[in-house]
Length: 414
Image 1 (cartoon, rainbow, N blue to C red):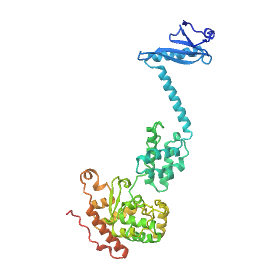
Image 2 (image 1 turned 120 degrees about the vertical axis):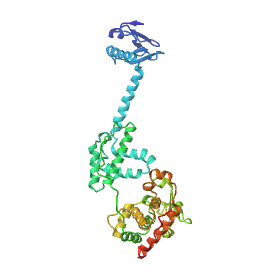
Image 3 (image 1 turned 180 degrees about the vertical axis):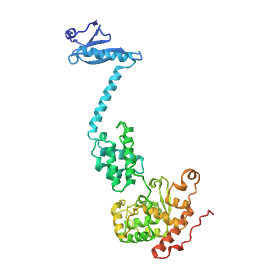
Image 4 (image 1 turned 90 degrees about the horizontal axis):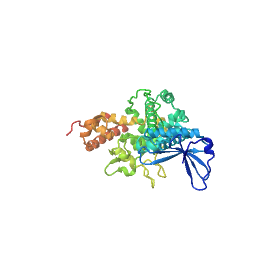
């Protein structure tokens, strides 16, 4: 049935006793009112853009929405149809967008930098980055204390710059650069997930040029650290001596597992999942290291060489380093400087550069680029010879003998 719909004519329509019936407007084709047993509602009918079937779009209830408003909405819907769009799908998309914006607004109330950092570490860094602990440390020590309570949407470049400036004032330019990299990666991750429109710190430059440290321990300093290990005892005294003896990284030595040791073969095999470059590393153990391991107490059920009772891994490295500083009297050094010292001594006693890099499990230098691709020699025998010479050099140092009586290792490949 068709008729010119007016406010009065619509009000006069009787509710259906059963079912429902439609009255179409003669002013706007496709627009009408549906009358049911309990009420009336506006609608518009149209043929879908594919011209395959007729669709009906409800526009609201009579009494809540006026005839004029309903007719305007119907007219807009028919314009969309004329443009090749489906007004029902368009409305659904608008509803979804409004709901998304509502959720974003509600979540933003509790979406702080601290909350974002926690999600970034748990959902992205831990599953994908071997260095996730470094990222976690940078956030906990430097970012969260200053801007952790800020809403993530409100963060600007000057806020992150404030964090970096504070780190630089503490004399930690390299840490500032790493912190910037961690924050930048977090923001890029949030943008990639659609949780931020843009990375707010694009354009920030590292606050200071990252310079590689040149500090290594001189012979008397190395001896002082070695001797101070007696005062520390186990496990930290053992830790520092193993760092000196193997040249391995702190995390690798601290996580040393009894199952990784082949004492008969005199080697320590660091598995790929514990190695920084994802490559298994075979460390020839000098006799001093074997003697040290033989004295380490082994707790029942404990898998870690330096673990505590109950099987927990070693922790509290900051306190351990402070005790070592006090006992040794050596100043201005970091634990990682022992690795540089290890490499320096090997060059002093004549170890080939390639062998030193193999001992350190480095992939840079002579093992990088095209040479690293085609040169697959693992330097096993050379590494063993170098470590035996290193063992003799250390014994001479410890016993107070002259250290210039070490026979240099041949630099020529036989």
